[in-house]
Image (tube, rainbow, N blue to C red; front, side):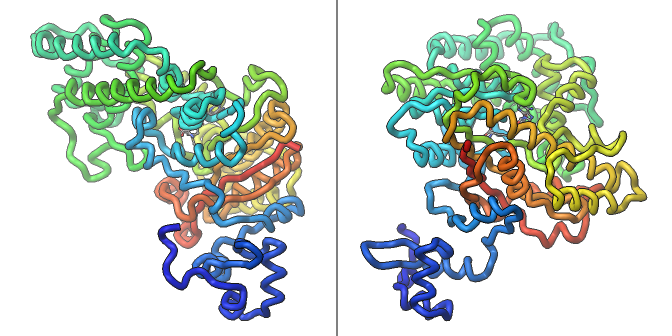
Length: 510
Ligand SMILES: C[S@@+](CC[C@H](N)C(=O)[O-])C[C@H]1O[C@@H](n2cnc3c(N)ncnc32)[C@H](O)[C@@H]1O
């Protein structure tokens, strides 16, 4: 409450005067929760700033179905403990900082959700079907809950699995390996011997991914990693290498992976690769120590499982009605390409050998990608939502002359995406216990200048599959990543005018 300014808290009469209604009307609105308000003892109090936002209409949801409309009347400003979802906060937090992940959410967001759903007093079974690098799972374990995750990207899945196993690692053994890595750098790295490791043959890049002096060091480091360590240690070294490899390459994230030259940056000709990896390893060792200490307070360690698989195809690994809380952020309808953006990691760590391997993962990903579905016959929309069908038809008609590169291609992508939303909701309903809660963070999107309120549409689809939409929490009213929807193929003047937001959609398994 520290940032409430003097005069920001209003009585009923003051608030009624501000918005020019009678005391009685405002009292009725407060009682029926149609306006942001709090009861303090027997009296109502209002925040001037909340009233102003409400009055401006900026935060008003645009519900479409009757059920979603009912949920929307319970719309709350983010007072409920749900905090900003941005992953940025994770960059400085133990364990979360190991691997940055686009559109990951923050640890404190997950904490807020778990606190809200009674998790303080009993052990919950928490699921994240799109686990990314494990924010939900780590925060669940930290509070003594059981955690299950699915993640289709092999590099993210490896990071996720390594993090949930942190409690079992032998820190001394890891630190000894870091010491050996140091010795290797002193003794061997600069010898003339050619490393036995070779660049992955299937990996193609527009400009050399690493400059020559850097590539030589990288190959020597990968030699060390592959030959000199126990499996779990090797995995931690691979995660560290993956987390920093782009920083000494001729590519950068903007937020998609592109050449440094394309972003107006000079190539990286020289770098001390070992020093960069070692810094990451030391950070990881520090986090292992602190997390182990934290976990030791729980007595017995809660179970955590990570399936490096597509949830859509393998949700039956979970027993029916076994999940209490699901906290996730599925891929957005913005065509952010998780697979392409981790191509270097997947190839250089030997997780894929050829482009066809990437394609296979792409086709199993939630919503797929514009690149995988734009051609081919029209994809029919499966959810029975006439207004969504109309929107997709409108999209299909935009720049139709461009075929796969215009509306028809994007309409195929949107239909595939919403079909997967339906598949996801139907399968998830089977896995949730009755009364269980789903919190899915999802944002609106713009395709060919048409706005898709993905959060509302997702909620409507969920309601058709046995969920009740309880609330929409607007967790971020402005988000980054515009460049993804603004790229040349997709740009449209309208894009600039639509506000991008993120909502935590709260559903209850009916
Ligand atoms: C928005 S990110 C989630 C990030 C996560 N909340 C975190 O903090 O790290 C969505 C994730 O879903 C994964 N994904 C996409 N399709 C999937 C599928 N069918 N099954 C499992 N994971 C999938 C992507 O690889 C990506 O890591």
